[in-house]
Length: 405
Ligand SMILES: *Cc1c(COP(=O)(O)O)cnc(C)c1O
Image (cartoon, rainbow, N blue to C red; front, side, top):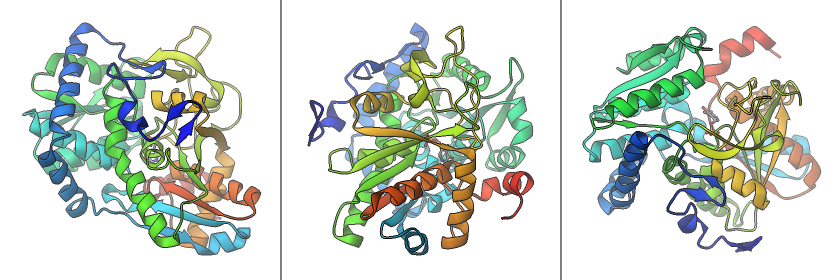
């Protein structure tokens, strides 16, 4: 399928280019020392990860350890309550550890093993990526250093406990605002020192090349499964596909399975409390081109051009940029990006729980809310939503802030 001059039959092979660019976005803006380490990972990715041995081992792990394929569920009661549009969810909440993040962490850690590395290094904000990478490290018997701001360590006690139980070292970062940005800087510094024995494992389709490509490719299992399952269930493609966008990994995984098909694709960003800078994290909707964390993309900037403070009720979505491939697909118009507020998100959280017996992560509730909105405007047809994770991690917060509805 051709769209705006791009041939999507060959898109996944042609993008990014060999320097890691999706159009003008992506690339690698890092120190020469770190660039050496990235080149090593890129080289290993193309030789090791494309080998049949690696592919068949990852397939076995996905089946026997992660519990893949995850199913698609038809949301029968919710659909009926809205009218004639049929809503479906791809159940990444049923992936081991309760979210999609393990899809790329198992791939990255398996690559580490093949490269003979002894340790994985990562940063984490809300702790979801930390738990996924700690899980993968335990599985493969790798050491695991997770850098985390002291503010986040206090807020995310259950995830800190999980990482420690899984055998990871949680390394406290105390400088600056002591949150995700400082943790990411500290993790990069550690990696520059230790890259001979360690590999850096990023948490989304962000960072310097090859990470946006590699994480997309490891997450593409979501879209491949979803397309086949949906056709098997209904005999046709969905009319629309929806996923939430933080850094953009669950959405890129899902979208990659549908880019080359006549399906409308929607990425949902968090509008938080409103449109003022600092009240949301909708970088593609309200941001502009810029470089941060080693890559060029669309980002939210403050008056100095630095990454702006962001906010969302979903801690997994409050990132001031999105992966470069999203910026590319945004400009191209192949994916439409729109926003959902905190309030709409919380309504969808309770609606899905009550009508379908599925408690979604607050991140995923953004996609559910958008799917519901879309269904109301469509009149007929079908919408497939990526349910990126389960809401168990959000229970305490929801009860404290919103009570039981
Ligand atoms: C981390 C997380 C997200 C956001 O990350 P993406 O890279 O944008 O997918 C979304 N949903 C859940 C459940 C998460 O844990």
